[in-house]
Image (tube, rainbow, N blue to C red):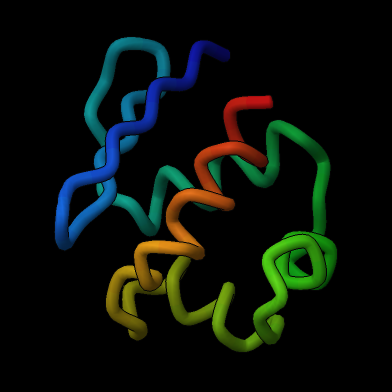
Length: 77
């Protein structure tokens, strides 16, 4: 799976295998590809599992800038 992530001032753009996906779908796809649970990703980011669930289900807004940068480094590593 080829992953590209761009961070704008207010958003995150995720491209998976050449296809632009919404951040919620992108986070879920990459997390599953890396075989991480929501709890594991939450721990790595210093947020709650419920926050990760909210991102993946589209209930929570985009993560803040510092979390986006950490998320990018984790997902593209």
